[in-house]
Length: 373
Ligand code: SAM
Image (cartoon, rainbow, N blue to C red; front, side, top):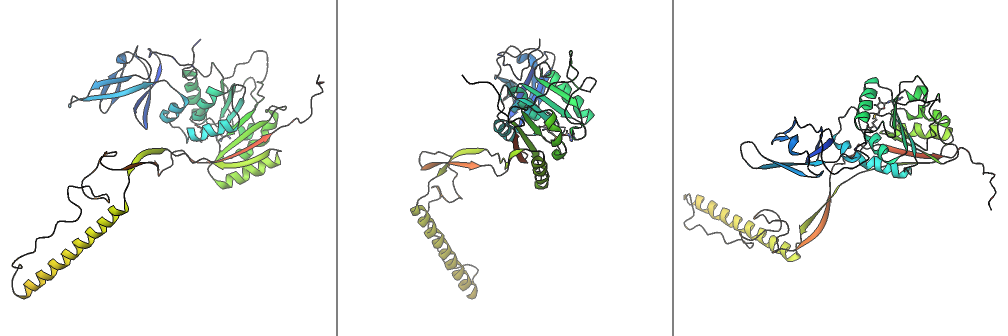
């Protein structure tokens, strides 16, 4: 059967593969490899047949139009992280800084059975699919449901561990029965056994879905829930509903994902600073002196002073680097100067920030009657 490229890595780029083409940071495009097709960028055209047979991760180069220089892209394996950066947006999506935190916080692993609503653009669904035993995802918007279903199918996820269902979970809960609009298949059973151990709700009114959960979560294990909401008023309503429905360990966090950039900064001495101050003072005095001479000369009816004083050389030589800005540009790391290693953070936060409200529930707290030997 068709293996999902999101769960199984392969070595070589082949006809029919889904490949993610890295053009630059923040510009990654998904393509289906087809020997008859080309990938167009503003630098030029990359024929797919140049990619086929090469290793994933390879750099593909072409001569650019006009200039005749080289342009290149990298052809990468699909991963949930790269998919999140390249997928077609049909809704707001959950980004990796949030999804990775949510999954570890809910203890997701190969035995986790997840309920997710709404599916949206399927960004988080791909991350869950790689990690968990089963993902049951729900979407009430018919077009988004169809698009996500098609995408999961193309990515081989429906054959593996993903089930998508057309459903308003606030109105109708999570149970999946024969005859429902769903990708689930039924053998002898009339409804799917969900037994969820983790629940992720990214919808406007999660509080209306919470009371439906008791029917579909595992009873004898600790179940985790996470509600993803942009407004604090939503968090308030969510917490009220979680408490009313017997959820415990309620905690809200917010992820502020930032990228740290490492670079070198010039070390400036106090002597440099003092030299610079003296230099400024000297220039200022020379300026005052010149102005005074000019005014005097004008008084005497001359346009220029007889002998204009030649301005003295500034203390900091022109050719020498001025450590406080203007002047010769020094290349970062120039061995003629002293440097220290520093980190710089981005000023903008990239992830779509929402509040994450977590809680857990253990429904059946009774001890088993098994005798310990
Ligand atoms: N987490 C998704 C992702 O990473 O791509 C994005 C989810 S998007 C912000 C919210 C989705 O929930 C929308 O597609 C919306 O149609 C769906 N939705 C809203 N209310 C719903 C409900 N009651 N039942 C099912 N889906 C719902």
